[in-house]
Length: 468
Image 1 (spheres, helix red, strand yellow):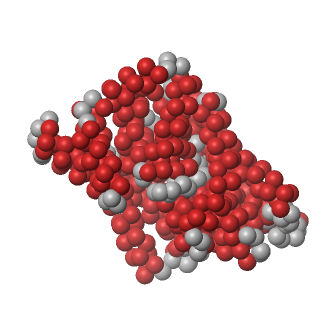
Image 2 (cartoon, one colour; image 1 turned 30 degrees about the vertical axis):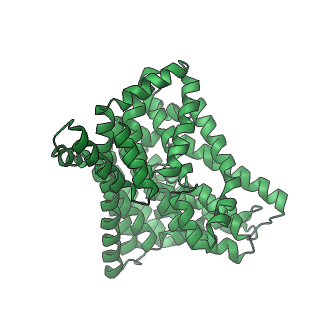
Image 3 (cartoon, one colour; image 1 turned 180 degrees about the vertical axis):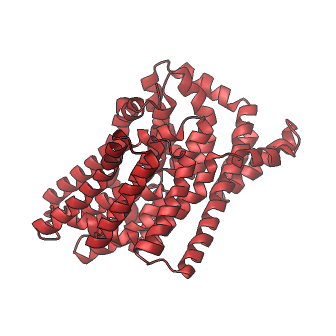
């Protein structure tokens, strides 16, 4: 066990990529311990990715990339500006609302930061905001990406923990709303303290148009439900409502109605049993292609080819981490590391709330050093048996794990979102870290509530009958 973990840590410290470190440490352990033949590495790597839910990974990545390239992010930003730009600290509020909408499409914090975050930071800087304020609020709002469905980390966790990915998606909605309100309250406090004013004048017509877009989107599921209640077949009801929606959007040329429909289609489709979360990822890609090629006509064949190659590259790196972590996690179990850790935890406490406090501290530290996907695939086999012994719902634990790891994306030394925002804003890493620091407060408050008030997470999937 010391050889396995020691080799992994040493390789990490000398700068070897996380996936390679896990793979090399696993091979070294097998060679020197003789616990299993070398061929087990290949077998476990194949088993690690031979999963139907993992098919969602490339499709969600592709959907997020298509939304960015097709200019949908700009439309989302314009919509958010019309809705909340008139508030004090308007563009900071726009930053958060824009991230909420984009979270319903991308499923990753990195896509949020690199996509709509680029527009938001430039706009805030052009309107006189300190660049540190722009970076801080963008970093905080980017964590919403994997909490509000769809979510790439939820897909990986659901596969590793053998729990419903659909239930995880539904469980993320209320925590996502709660985090959004906390961040908007934080912006209001900053605006009052620093004297930030509004960035666009309040125009009733502009605000009403943005509000109308929300109403139209909400009317879509209501219209479908009423037609089904009246005896119209489900397929026909959805088709008619969709055609009417497209016609209305085309005639009035709304900025974001079709973009706002993305989470409605995904969540509604899963709730109606039309498709699984994996199939929802395919639906997200098809909807993105429709927006880019047909509705907005902003997606060229050259851009489509580039997006495809970018998706292949990102997917390969994600799945390589999953395969290497699969071998590493299996060896941790074989070497009795998981059992030893379980015994150690129970020697410290037999109270589940104390355990949750300790596990939060552990995951926060791990999230500072490990990639999100690697951390999930390593930690779940070790922690889940203890979670179940404490009778903690694995859906609840999935939210806790994911939010902790999202906070890790904002902190050194591995914080990917921190590095991306540093490059976008052309700030040094030191200034970027200091800019992000105050915005960790609402994230930690949200983490505390989500950890110790399970109903925030479990109420919605319980009401929908996804968990008991």
